[in-house]
Length: 302
Length: 90
Image (cartoon, rainbow over all chains, first blue to last red; front, side):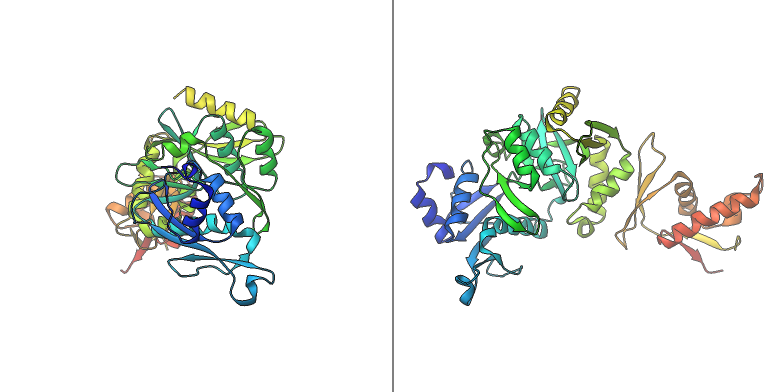
C-alpha cells in the first residue's frame, strides 16, 4: 500500500501517533508530528512511497512543538530521534525542512554498513552517475533536472556504496532545492511537484521536489557507479565535461565522505575499486537543458 | 642531512591507475589520504622495500647531483610531514 492510497484522516492519524512506517529506500521511517503543515508536505511529497507492513522501523523521529511558551510565542519546532534532541530548535515554519535535515543526520551517522558520500546519484541504462560536492555547487538542481528528464534518482544527498559488491543502494527522497533553484526547476519542468517553501533557513529559502514515481518504485534496484562527476554551476557557462584524474577524484570523494574516516581502509579500498570502472569528470554548466543533453550523450555512449 | 636514513610507514595503502602520474596513499593510523606526484611515489616505493638515505636514493651517477639532492630532500620533507615516512635511528 502506498501513502497516496490512504485517506487524509488516516495519514493524519498515523503521523499524529507515529504509527505510519514509511519505506524510504532500504530504511523504514516512523515520523510523529501534529503540525498540519508538515503532514501536508509528507502527504504530498511521499505519496508514492510504500507503507511498511511490520512494526519495525530504522528511525523513530518526531517533529514536535517547542517547550513552554515556545509552543505559541515565536513557535518552534524540535527534531527528536529516539526521544533524543540532537539539534537546537528551529522556527516552526521550518518544521518540514527540519524533518528532512534530521533524517539526513540519522542516515549519515548510523548506517556505516555503507560508505556514505555527500553526493547526488542517478541512474540510466543500469549505469550510475555519482555527483559528489559541497552545498552550493548546483548538484541538487542538476540532479532534479536529470530526474525530470527520465534519469532514475537514487538520491540527491547520499551515495550509499556497498564495500562488498561496489553497488549503490538507492535512498530516493524529496530533492532539496534552494533559493534560485526553486524557480529554475519550476521553469524547467512546470509539471513538477514542489512543496511549500521554508524561508530564512540556514540555507536560505528551501523547497522540496517530489521524486518521480519510477525513482521510488525502483528503490530496491541497486546500480554500479559508472561516472563520477563534480558539477559546478556558473551562470552563462557552456556545459563542458573535463576529464580528471582518478587519484584526485578519490581524494575529493573521500573529503565528501560522511564516514570515510570511520571505515578507513575499507572505505579507501571500496572507493579505489569503484573508480577502476568509472570515468571521472569536472562539469561546468550554466543551462539545465544543455546539461541534460551532455549527460544524455554520455549515457548513450556507454 | 643526506646521510639520514628513512623508511616508509608500515601498512600504507596505495593505488595507482594506468596512464596517471599521481597516485593516492592512505595512512591507516592517521586516516589521512594523500595524492602523491610521481617523484614522491617513486621515493615512497624505494622506502617501502628498504630503508635508505637521501644519498643512496639519488645515487652517484647523476649530473647536477646537488640540484637533485635538494629536490629529493624537499620530497622527503613533504613525505615526513605527511607522516608517510620516518627517519630511522642510526
